[in-house]
Every structure is written in structure tokens, then in C-alpha cells.
Length: 249
Ligand SMILES: [Zn+2]
Image 1: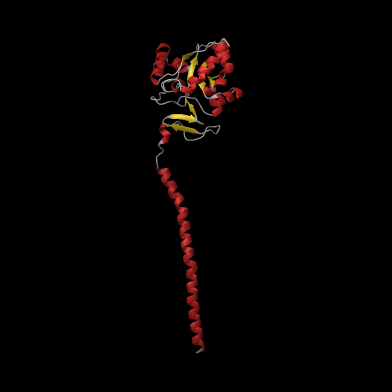
Image 2: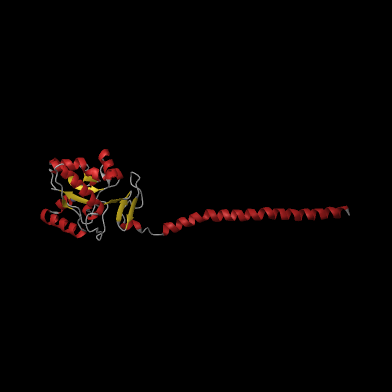
């Protein structure tokens, strides 16, 4: 009788143990399953990404979507490059053939008019010698240089079509484009005052390694007063300031 009772107790204990074990084992199994599933998924995701082709890199500039060496964001919007929100055209970054603002932009023209008026009050006569140029016009100029003086000369003194800042409507050549312009009273005035109206001398002296161009004291680019003032103070050219290249591919 006593043995029978003990047997019954043992049975109850066994059942109880079994229930308890299940209560522990099942949740552990479920949790470990979840953990395994979770840890497996990033690997699967990684594989999916790696197998996809990278469409942007073929047509966009090499640094597109990244930041420059100075930490500024590079954006390519419909083939037009903006660095820190500033439209950039140089030997690295070109414009699409159909990019055509039609003329100098409103801001650029307004800033020039103000500058021209201020200069006139000091007896300095300023005029736009060459302003907005279409892609086609730049192509004509480049080909003419190449035909008359050879390809090397064209490369040195003319931008390739699509690579001229004149196509942006933000740039123009003031007065006489010539090597002695910086020594004329107009050239001296531009050097001292252009930044007050939001313009920079885009290809300053001694910056060819950055800009890709020889000194052009007559070629102005509108960037707004704040940046123009900053660059004037720091002595940096635009490529140097933003940390970008200017080299044909
Ligand atoms: Zn120019």
C-alpha cells in the first residue's frame, strides 16, 4: 500500500517535471529560432544588395552621392552637379547639352547692374564682353580654336562643350579678356570690389592646379555676397574651398 502511494507520487512528479520542462524548452526553442532568423536576415539582405547592379556610377561623376574631401555634399540633379548647394561646372563636372537658362540669370544680371553703377560713380566703365553661351555656341568656339590652332591650344584656352561655366548663366567675361586686364584701372577695381556684389574671379592667379585654368582676371562667377566675401578673405578658389577636383576624364 505504501509502495503504491509512493508510486503514485512518483508519477505525479514525473508529469509535473514534464510540464515544467516543456514550459522551459518550448520558449527557449522559440526564442532561439527568432534569434537565428534575425541574425540570418542581414546576411540575406547583404546578398540581395550585392547582386544588384549599381546604375548611378556609370553616368554620374565619380564622387556623386558622396561628400567632398572638405565634407561638402555632392548632388547630381538631372545631370547638373551641386556641391553644398552651389552649381558647379569645371573640368570634372559638366552640364547636359540641353541645359539652357537662355541668358544670364536674374540674380547675376541684377548683381552686375549694381556693380556697373557703383563702378561708374568712380569713373570705371564696366561691360559684359561675353555672357551666357549655349552648348552649341561653346562647341563652335572650341572647334574653331582646334581648327585654327590645334587641339592642344583649344584644350588650354577653351572649355570643351558642356564644360564651360558660361553655359550656367552665372558667369561672364567683363571688358577685355586679355592677359593685362588685371593691370588696367577696370581690372584693379574688379579685383578690389567684385566680391561686394557677389562675384568671384573664378580662375585666380596661381590656382591652376585646383581650377584647371590659367589666371583669368576678367572671368567672373556669381556665388552671392557671403561666399564671395569668404573666398576673398581666405584666398581660396572655389575648388579649394569645396574640396573638389577639376580634371577632364
Ligand atoms: Zn569666361
